[in-house]
Length: 131
Image 1: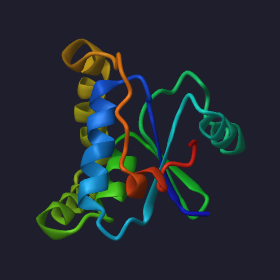
Image 2: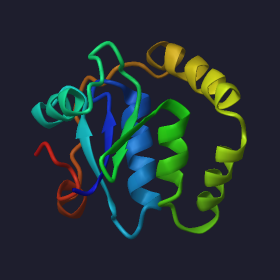
Image 3: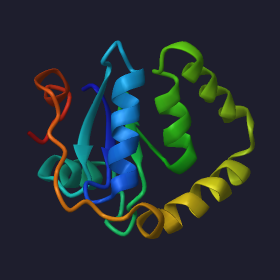
Image 4: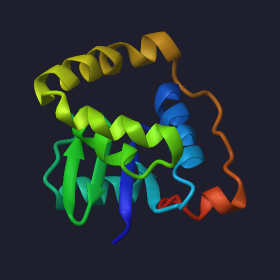
């Protein structure tokens, strides 16, 4: 199974984050599904992740990662200088997650909710599992 990023499909910040990931994962190893999709729900059940969790999730080699752990694991797939973000794994998790939680708590208020869906290009579309 490919490495999968599960994201909140209604969140503008999450949508922008997926676009960022696509731009910087030029090897196209990461795939995507919204938390609200059938595939997203199925992966939640398989990995026993409660529906109350609406954070970014990253599943790699059958292991789910949440919050800042997910972000650091995703950054390992980036090209160029953005790959340096992976070194945040050396910051203690409790500190990383505090920063992550602050952004996550206010993301809808700061960035809003999606009113219209962004249409990915055909190449990008192949990377979405819930097409």
